[in-house]
Image 1 (spheres, rainbow, N blue to C red):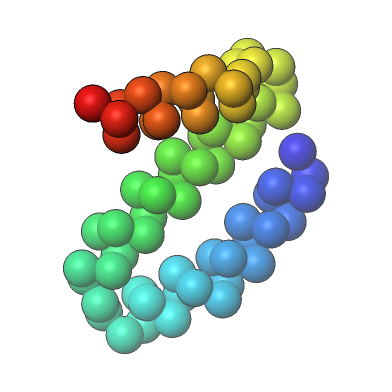
Image 2 (spheres, rainbow, N blue to C red; image 1 turned 180 degrees about the vertical axis):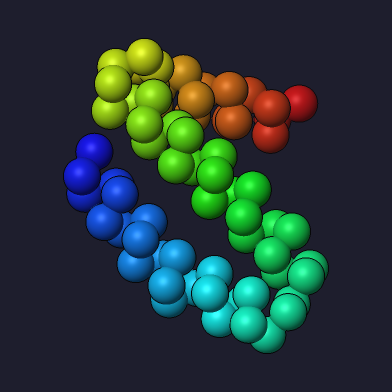
Length: 67
């Protein structure tokens, strides 16, 4: 979990702060929700609240592409 926090802090300073300074609202409307969703997912996985099963995810993707 500490690794996630450190990496997201780096992403905040390297990516989001320059976007805020440049006032690029389209990129901010996309970046901030994506970062929040992935951070939430990482926390849920690190606390074992969600047990991701990659085989089921890949099977769903392949089956949706084949239809």
